[in-house]
Length: 210
Image (cartoon, rainbow, N blue to C red; front, top):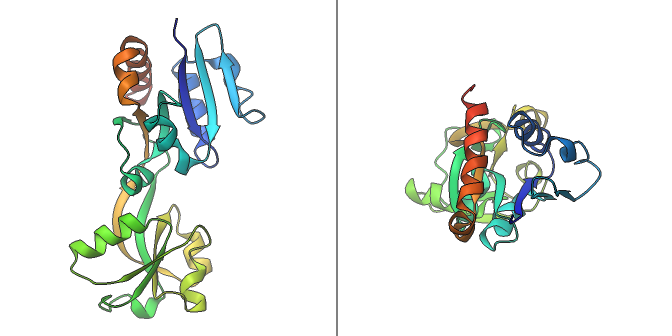
């Protein structure tokens, strides 16, 4: 039996992903060690889990290093990889927003600077609005940018909004809501179709309360 490999995201969504797979009866025994290892092999059921950075999950799946992956919709919209998005997993709820100091809330943003970890999402959003902005790509601590004068506003993912409030920022506009999605490598969907569809079915039953 061919091994099916699944890329899980490190960090805030790991626990929810593990709970979902366990509820679906997928590799219950090996998933209890997820916090200690980067690769977990369930030889009995021919499934291999790998723990990778959330931003890297689509790359692993697109290139076939993983057959399936769990990834936020925000990352999928940013990267636009060549893969299948097959299931909304209904966890990892957050929002992609434009945020900044309260004094810019109602101002027109043309010719302003926007700091973000999601340059493609930001560029597409402002282009649709007809606003010409300068996008500044950052890899972390985006909230700092308006405070130190690097940008007027930011585009970032928000869960509770607490980090924004702590830094004196407010949500100016919501771009889209985001949840975790199940993604599949296009070649794997053909070569391992039966096994992958079985996993999708089991997960869907749990999500739908079956």
